Each structure stands twice: as structure tokens, then as C-alpha cells.
Length: 357
Ligand SMILES: *Cc1c(COP(=O)(O)O)cnc(C)c1O
Ligand code: SF4
Image (cartoon, rainbow, N blue to C red; front, top):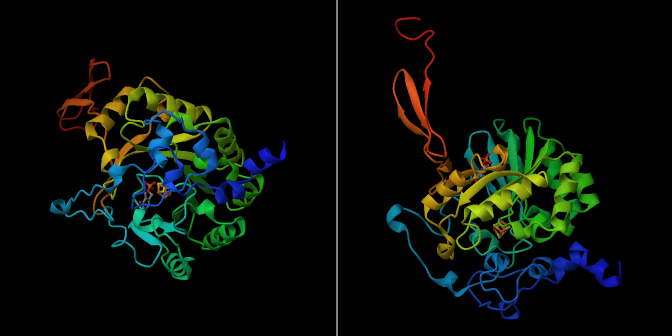
């Protein structure tokens, strides 16, 4: 590698040279939500294509500043998932009985234009977060067996800082699994260094979820980053967001999901785009999501099909949406259809039913 290549592969160089001025990217306009794009991610962009999926995810468009209100449904567009109401102490969201979301930073390597947590990730000068209260909460609440470290992107922290956090959580006896949510493999795969992976390996069982939205994001480098994680024995999942003009068609999702499993990344969720500031132009009709799932089922490997969910506004949690396969049902049988419109009768068990066999 020559000096320029060495620099290019250095994640700190990439982070430092990220593009933050919307005027420096073709088609970019200055909007309320800050921009940041790594040189690596920028290099994936098709310069002349205004609908390039990489561009749409990372370059601010004027539509972002159009404000839509959903007050009549009781939705606060700044925090549509009511994360703040469900936050017992700073940096913890406790929505489900056995697990918490732990936000450890408000920084990301790239600011996704459709981000739900703009209230956090939008904080221009993120203060160094005070995490003591959060640790104390997790230590006191013995029902917590799963801690999901998120942000922002936890991998923006230095290795030592990140390790300190993971070590503290691992020391809590009732915490069984630790999860990390990161977009680094997608927007800055150089961040997945051998050293980082060596550190993470010490705190098993640990799971990582990343966030690929389009097959173009799966490059040789990102595939290599994913491979390193999986080789360390860390299961790697993927959460995508359904985005208008980016991935809202069956062929794109098919290519994305099959490419993911080829790289040993398991598609986990496909999110309906949350309601949020500057998100409206990314939202799709709910039926599109259901049709995409219908399009994937049977045609590709079962575990390559993600679960399509709406994170219910107001903090209702991730709610599963799927095509309807049950045509009718009574005490004796269920009538099913498959994707190709064929019908099947499946009789209920007779043993133990009223009247005996
Ligand atoms: C998404 C989320 C989780 C994790 O949910 P899973 O369905 O277990 O992946 C936990 N807490 C909060 C607040 C979340 O938003
Ligand atoms: S990486 Fe996640 S938290 Fe950061 S901007 Fe993108 S969606 Fe938001």
C-alpha cells in the first residue's frame, strides 16, 4: 500500500476528513440537521445520479425542512417513540421487561438523513455523556438480562472508552447478553480493526446489529469487516429501514438480503420508517412493506427474510406486520394460502378435543 492507501484505510483519518459542508457535495443543501459523510461512503456515490441510494441516505435535501405534524394522533415528531418518557435515568430507555437500550454517544460516522434520534444525534456539540446513573440503574434492576448499546454509534468511541463501558456491563451478574448497534461496517468498515474485534471477543456473549439498506453498500471492504466480526464468534444481524426511492422494491431487497446472508449477516428487522423531523419524504405506504415481504418469502432462503415492523408511536414497541396467509379458520381446520395463491386445508388435532377421538 502506498501512503495514500494507508491513510484511506485508517479509520481516524476517515473520521477526521469527513465531509460536513453540504455545499461540498453535489445537490447538497444546508438543512437543520447536520451533515457528515465519510470519504469512504462518499466514494460509493454516483456523482451524476440524483437518486443514487448512497446520496439519498447521506446528502441533505430541501424536503427535510418541510414540517409535518401528527399531533392529532398524539405523536411528538421530535420523539415519536416516546423514548424520553420511557427513560428512567439519562441514556437508558427501558421499554421491554428484560432489556434496555443504552445510548452511549450522540456521535455517528455518517448522519443518516432519516434518523429517528435526531434530537440526540442532532446535538451539534455532544457533551461527553455522564453514564454513572445508567450503570447504577442496570446494576439495581435485576430483571435486565439484555443490554443494547446504541447511540449515536458506539464505535465512534475510542477502543479504550468502549471497552470500559462493555466491561462495566459485563460485570453485572444478571446481564446475560450484550448487544451493540452500529453502522460502522456500512459507512466506515475500516473501524472494524483486528484490535477492536479482539476486545469485543473478550466479552461474550455479545451480538452486533448493523444497518445496511442497499446492496450497493456491501462492498469488498464492508464484507471484510462483517467477516471479521463473525469470525470472532459474534453473531451479526442487520436492521434495514424501508426508504422511498432507496430500497422500496422487491428486487433491491432481494439482492440486499441474499448478499447479506452470503456474507453471514442475518437480516433481522425491516423497519417501517419512523415518523420524525425531516423524514416524511422517506416514508412509504405500509402496503409496500407488506408486499416486499410477500415478494421475498419462498423465493429466497427463509432466514434471509427480515421481519417487517413498525416501531409503534408512543412507545408501543416493535410490532410485526406480515402478509395474511390465513384465509379462514374454525374449530376443525385452518385454511391457508401460499404466496402463489394456492389454498391448503390443515385439520386441527383431534386428540383431546371435545368429544374425544
Ligand atoms: C429496539 C429496542 C430494543 C430491542 O428490541 P428487540 O426487538 O429485542 O431487538 C430494546 N429497547 C428499546 C427501547 C428498543 O427501541
Ligand atoms: S447511524 Fe443510526 S443513530 Fe446514527 S444517524 Fe444513522 S440511523 Fe441515526
